[in-house]
Amino acid sequence: IDNHAFCGCSSLNAVTIPSSVQVIEDESFRGCSSLTSIIVESGNNVYDSRNNCNAIIETATNRLIAGCQNTIIPNDVAIIAGSAFRNQSNLTSITIPEGVTTIGDWSFAESGLTSIVIPNSVTNLGWAAFYGCTSLRSVVLPNSLDTIQAEMFVDCPVQSIFLPSSVKHIKNWGFWSTPLSQIYLTSPTPVTLETEEVFSSDILTCYMPTGTLQAYQSMPMWQNQRSLINFVEKDFSAK
Image 1 (cartoon, rainbow, N blue to C red):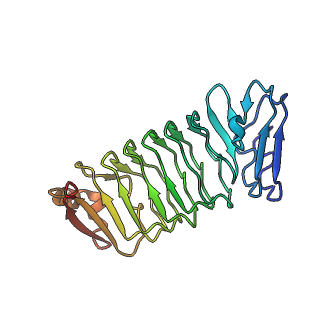
Image 2: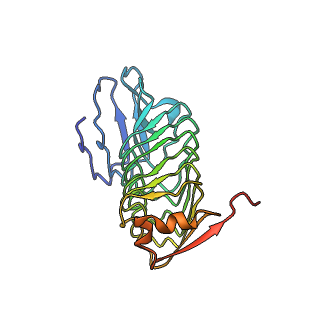
Image 3: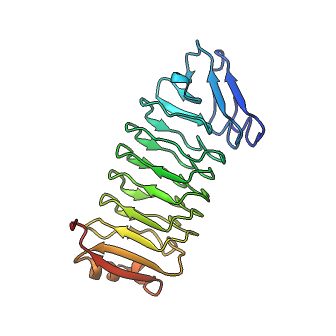
């Protein structure tokens, strides 16, 4: 099944993958927003839909390559492939189990998610993973994450976000076109910005650990945005 084979088939509501299918390329079912049922026939030696999960999983790698609004991600899935849930506008919530380590580029982009909790097992959160999720207001990030990748939250209505102390970098357009008004930067080492085009909020309050204000204000990418950002030191160890 070729890349984009059923892309944008918004009235398609059920898919059954025969046991004979050996190749399903990424984004084959992108934008099939009415999908409620995905079944891989038993006997397929490459793909499965284990535990009636309503998803296509590459058996050897435990990689989920396509899901829908009724997907329940099995506990043994390790990877959510790029664009696996892209354009699933009727997907409003999903549980990502502990054990998933990678969420690919554009994986949930332009979906209907309203909130997401990403488990601490995730170490790789891909570029534009939540791009265009125009209902996404609540995000919990894992304490294993090092980088907010480019365009990750573009056009998401997130107003406040807490970055775990593991986050050290924010890439281009990470929070572009969001109404972000508060960001909590808990790393004891100042978080670096890839470019000046990371935030587009009119006024943004950045909370950083006590004793790091001078370091932030001396970093060129932060310094160039001082007219838009209100820097506030905060003791994150206080209960």
